[in-house]
Length: 281
Ligand code: ATR
Image (cartoon, rainbow, N blue to C red; front, side, top):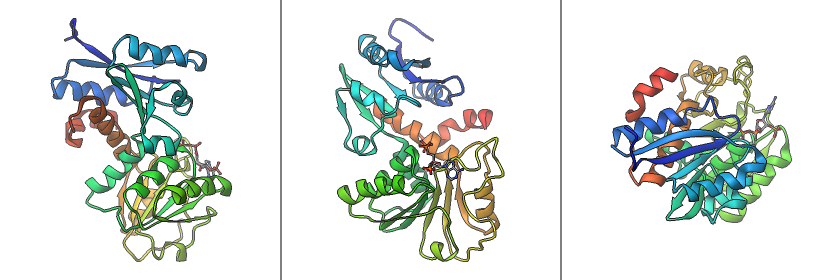
């Protein structure tokens, strides 16, 4: 029930109407008996400063931020978490008694998905396909979790190199870059392979970032951040090779669980969201 003490948490983006975040957070607020509601606001670029001021003025718990505001929002916040600063993008804001602090839970969401599946990041050799915003947040977070090596493969090499430089300057992981044409030999020492490109995303469901004729005869955890369709061609290729897989919905849900923890201080379970997940996916 909404009453005089109900707090607001919101999403700032454009467009926002297809977001899964209201389902995640309204379900969690109810499960954990927290008197708060989550709403989405379609915000124009020129209104971003006013929207941030509203988080303070209306004493909201905080907010999520999505495309196209994840980078620009940094200019309006009081403090930025160290990893969000390295990533250069914020997707979660905590209102800490009037001070707005920016975080990025995309990479943490990915790392938690891997850990909850029973795998480790530490000392692993990890290959990331793609070098956009999602790749950047994943690369920083897996380096932060002491991956042994990170290889970034992208169509546009200088974008891979830009992420590589951030990792080299701030973390101990070995970093390599390369083009997007991945061979069987390239996978020989890889433990975890992640697609962060949009290849395979609906409506382009027949695209695949990897050559489907490659046969793999070692254990690799194969992850795709694309969640529509649920089983991409990339994941199908992995399953055909008897490899373990992690789909994009896991990362989507885990970034939400982490944002909830930042606002509320309670660590929810993935299972708390089983019903809403089934309804949506
Ligand atoms: P996000 O924030 O979701 O990571 P993004 O920043 O637009 O989105 O990044 C998209 C990624 O998908 C990039 O790595 C992009 O490659 P380029 O850097 O070369 O543009 C990759 N990508 C998109 N379409 C692609 C295609 N047809 N072939 C290869 N890579 C593609």
